[in-house]
Image 1 (spheres, rainbow, N blue to C red):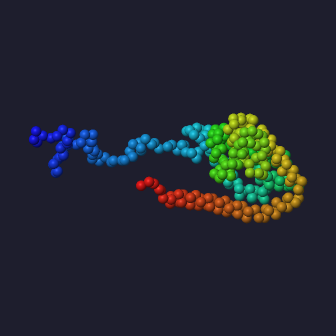
Image 2: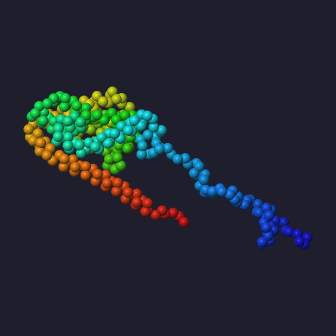
Image 3: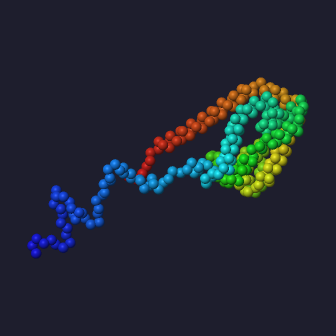
Length: 289
């Protein structure tokens, strides 16, 4: 029939005429306009699905769970040990020149124990007291690293290992030796060699060794080594005392130089971190356009 529309064809709307619902092609729906006052967020669903991580869920922390009181207490103790060691660096230079026995009993350092043996040989003093207190002082924080290993295992070992590849390899070697020969590893920590004591003690704790089994060999080996350093100073005698007396005249300059060196090292590291962060931010992102 004339005027009839062939089957299968669609009539286009007249240009300028209002589009009715029937004029919309099948399968397409007009976009809904947001209600007045409503902000449209393109990543709204993504934002809702991602909750803000809690403060303890940080890869730089040793635990993988919400920390308990034991976790927090141990973490605080590690911080205290770090602050103590940092503050003691310049004080060592003053203590050994001012009073070697006091330095030996506070720090347990090798040089101070040798000087104490020399002072005891020349001027006298309670050598046995110096010896025992210095032996305990040298390992007074060993239980902290053992405790950290018991709590966090390899988590704290990875943190103690350091960031450089050399430090990581050194820590891995120390862990391997500790897992096979724990007494040998403890012995090696007392030698003046790069064998990381905190990593060894944490590995012993991570292996499940009890504190009763851990502390006796540590204290025994410390006692043996401190006896050897005392005996060395005793055998040197007056010449070592003369060196200590001469050093005492310059100990404040040494302490000041150490302080300057510490702050210079800290400033240089912070500068390197900022430079590295700036370089990363300056690198343009590349993508497929």
